[in-house]
Length: 147
Image (cartoon, rainbow, N blue to C red; front, side):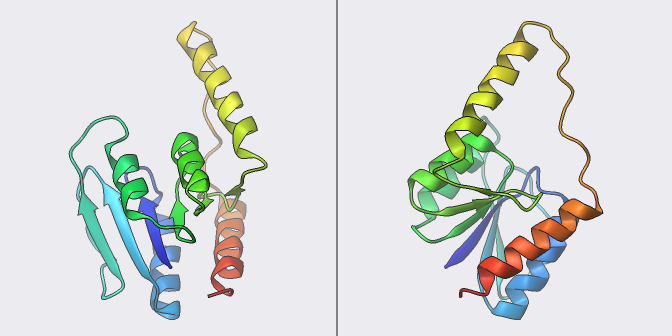
């Protein structure tokens, strides 16, 4: 099992939690981004830089991942592709995307995109707070306990 991170939008605090976990569990993690990330590299952490453009990092993650791998992303379309490929997708707030919830999440995302496209200010998600960090850490630990 490997962990792939959609690293362009992943908060630094989540990367720190992941780095400590992969070192502790000796699991490989790959950061995929279109701009180079620095720091947090070890024998268990590597990075792949992809060209800029829509979905280029997402496409690389889906290409590389295998069934059973874990992908860290807040990108719902990427999460859908991961779940379809029998991987696990966890967002930085500690919520797993599943076959049961991904369709509803995609529908809501598309609806909000339509609203924004018509000029409605929908705001964005709330800032990542300590509760989210704790939920992420707990969900990750629970998942990794199986490996």
